[in-house]
Amino acid sequence: MSHDPITVQEYFPLENAVKIMEKNYIKRLPVMRGERVVGMLTRADLMRVVAERGNALPALKDSDEAIRKKIMDGISEQSWLEPSVIEVAVRDGIVTLFGTVSDDRTAKAVQLLAANVKGVRSTNNELRILAPEFSST
Image (tube, rainbow, N blue to C red; front, side):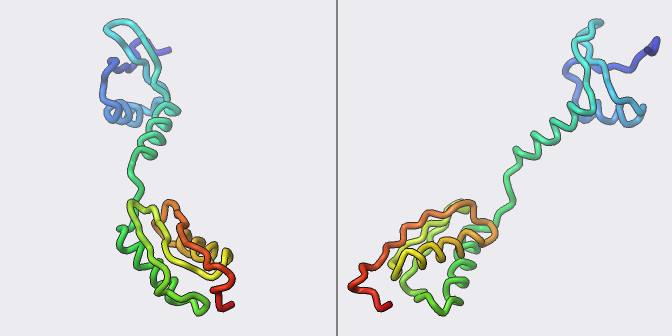
């Protein structure tokens, strides 16, 4: 152990502690409260902070209107689907599908199409299934 170790005080800014560790090629930094050691700052601690701060950042997302347009474009490209019977609402990346489709498979396919659009966080499938006697298939 060094006779004159490099230390930081308890509420020393983290960014400055990182600079000290980098500049002096040290892996651990004693944390002091006055003249008393109260902890040890390590590289693992720094990585944990970076990971936690990264999770706290809001995810980059497309605007709700852009998401809605991509979904509506995708629906209109499907030859097996009548786009005029589907309505799409998007709020904060959460998609709600409204309208009437011929069967459960079609409803699931539309939901999957919407779920695969970039920026969609989740989907609510409010599509109604047309009664068999009214279906043309």
